[in-house]
Amino acid sequence: MTFTQPAGANLPESATVDVLTRNGVTVLGDPAGQPVVFGPGYGTSQNMWRLVAPQFADERRVVRFDHVGSGDSDVSAYDRRKYDSLRGYAADLLEILRALDLHDVVFVGHSVSAMIGALAAVEEPERFARLIMLGPSPRYLNDEGYLGGFERADVDALLDALEVNHVSWAAEMAPALMKNADRPELAAELAESMARTNTMVAQHFARVTFLSDWRRLLKNITTPTLILQSSDDLIAPLEVGAYLHEHIVGSELVVLNAAGHYAHLSDPGEIERQIRRFL
Image 1 (cartoon, rainbow, N blue to C red):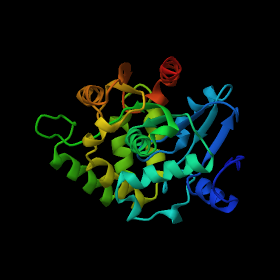
Image 2 (cartoon, one colour; image 1 turned 90 degrees about the vertical axis):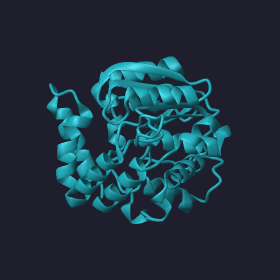
Image 3 (cartoon, rainbow, N blue to C red; image 1 turned 30 degrees about the vertical axis):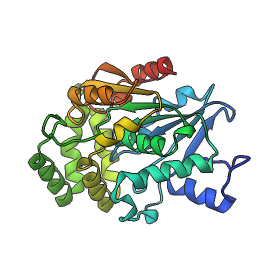
């Protein structure tokens, strides 16, 4: 774990350390460079960004973190009431940015972290320069005139299975989420990452994620936004990427020649290229 107390931070040192320890924050790269902050998706840790994030450290300040209950975060900081909405996770993100005194931020969020970053950017738009969303979804459930990819009965069954046996659920879901069947080591890594998440947190975070609806938020996003959409993604089908692009003014949509929900692990070079192009 690596963190520093920056000059000009508004929090006392003890509070800063608590925030950064709570979310297992790591910082590397050029302290004077534009900050690029990477947020992990559901059930994974910042380690999933290890093939992409360090590539920007030569010229930028690179920040990674874990959501409370995952990775190297402090699970004792988990508050079910706070995290009963993605707004609780967005509050954590803003606390991290304030603690490190970060401005002109490029936020790269995978899956649910894309919506968490959007919530934070709407709350404090002056702090953000760019939003990059990898495999985002504002709503996972199908609705009248909207295809999210899942019927309510399917999500209920998924959540029930998770609550019966978290580890078995992770092992069964990982290959379908990762795709790339010719590279089984990727699914194995994903399953291990999801299984590491605190069981109680995994169950609650899944319900908060899969039953959320942030479509109304999209019209309020003013930060320049890039949407990266895999061409074959069980969690975020192509229709979801198109919906986001239509409802986020001025956004750019790129459909990747990639399969699965974790292109930053299966095709990190392409994700790096798209981020650099957008910047």
